[in-house]
Image (tube, rainbow, N blue to C red; front, top):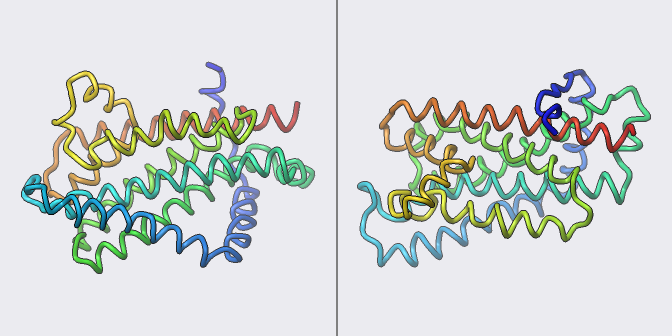
Length: 261
């Protein structure tokens, strides 16, 4: 396990081939995928931002809908990356034998896993941009702050994409993912400063939330929107970069062992 952390996969042209294969398949499900990507965050926005928001006073000088708008983008990317990285990867690995077929070509296992992570990151980022467009049209997200924050949102998508692929390499069945979702992803979407400030959490939970990637991604995005910078931004970005590299290495090492050994 420790050695897997330092397993750095080799990048080659096969990475783009794997990404392109996934993109070509995505085109056939484009309407269904984008419909789901648009609708679910909007349901949360209307139910919480305009429903519950009527009973909430301003937070940091914003109305409640404006406060949770960055969270809608961040959580959208997290959920899409998690589900695409876990269920889709597991299906290709155990049901469709897609990966076993791909490595019969000149594409190496390293290129395969990097291509998958790149695709999952891309699809998650598409969801972020899609939600951002809607929020911008609704006047909840300033366009200049949005453009500045896209780099951090892309970085966060990469972290959850690598995490999803890594989890898929360890799963024994589809039911295994429900534990990750219920015990990790869903709580993270609730207690990382998404629907209320972190300052409202008990001290123990507040400190624990700082170990979670969504907290660091969302804190950085809120800095762009508030125009208030401090040294925590570099801590947040550094932490996400470290997690992205470690999880990518873990996923690469695990998948190579499953395919080659």
